[in-house]
Length: 314
Image 1 (cartoon, rainbow, N blue to C red):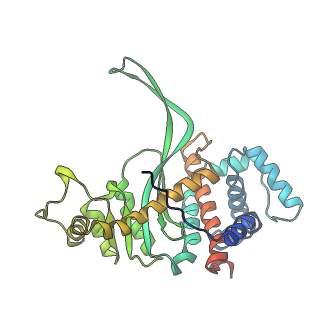
Image 2 (cartoon, rainbow, N blue to C red):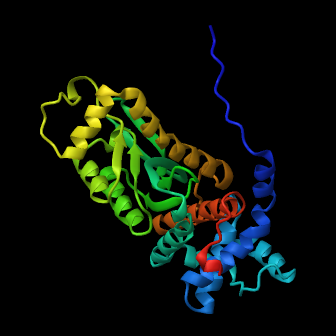
Image 3 (cartoon, rainbow, N blue to C red):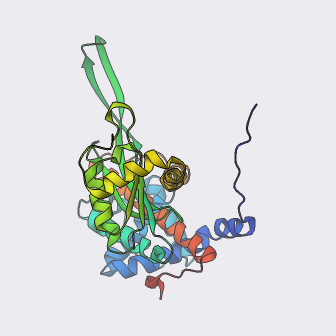
């Protein structure tokens, strides 16, 4: 007997409003956010240009400059438009990552009034580069597309990204997750933090509990499962005990992590699943700019759904 998939009703009027005002409010959010974070007219103009460019996947730097010139001609933006080469050079700058990190932080702060439960996940983003090597086992040359690894921590109610790492290489999932907890705790009150089995370790539980939160990670099963006798920090043991004794209730909290996967999916659908820059620093900046645009979309939704007006727009 087949079971019907559970469907969630949405407020169609609210959905229509947020969709229709996405571009109407985009340039206003970009202007106020960059003016709040950046110093100097040149830097403010450059960051606004980069954010508008990366709003549109597959847009080359020359076509992006053409779009910016059109927006300026009709008075939608009042910034200085650099030549395409200058815009490309800024996109490759290593120093840009500090400013972009601050933009992620400031764009997430307004949601602190409603977000207290968080989740961490990582996902892959395709590049246009390939690596090749000779496999002794297969006795042939292997050629595979290179990927970026994106680590995101988001509020599970709105999908706002509170901390972000874009890495050229894989690994360090647990170290990055603990850094995200620290970064998020600076601006948010943490009640719960969830994640898949990758994050099931004592140090992660220690970090979450030290910030006043309760961890909900997917616990191990089989031979590696907690047997009730292993030593560990209290929050780690309590988490495993609840997983075993009350799995239904535990699952209600743990499965909030599904929201971070939905965020990754929607971001890829809206802002693209590939980066097109050639150099590592440029690829990292390109992907980070797209996540800032994701946060701006969330701010637009928050404006209509929860009547939240960011401090940086006051």
